[in-house]
Length: 195
Image 1 (cartoon, helix red, strand yellow):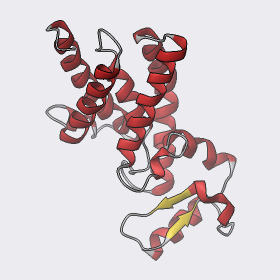
Image 2 (cartoon, rainbow, N blue to C red; image 1 turned 180 degrees about the vertical axis):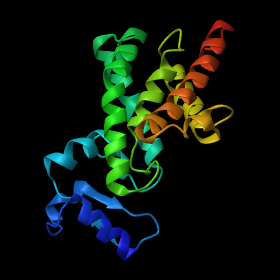
Image 3 (cartoon, rainbow, N blue to C red; image 1 turned 90 degrees about the horizontal axis):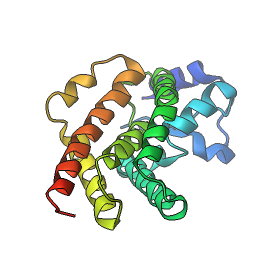
């Protein structure tokens, strides 16, 4: 994997790794070494957004960490600002293009399809799931989290096919599809009075 580290450094700059830039560490999978991405305008903004402010660097289940961050933000918005479905829909629309852009830039920089550190797609998918909730309470936040993670991991037909779309579009689209499936289950559950 030394070759992968070298390629990453060549693509992102030759500045030596700096311990103070720990936020920009990228695990190269099975490699025992870790490459450090220089903090430059070319890499810092896309990585910050793609990893959703560092959630993607969580060592165990970065996608779950991104989903949890989205749920906690949703709870905070709902609790303090009385935000509802319209707010989550607006957030999804505002972040959709930047998410695709950041995912594409990160995928290209790492030269890896759908890198595990990219979790902005989980954030958008989680918020899309919440659009299916007829009421927002602890039960719906928990159900939304569990349902989204289930569909995101399981990827029933045709969710898996969205991954074939190019670069960041495919990264984000499959999670939005998983979020749509989860939102539909949440909507049906609410209409049946299950929460």
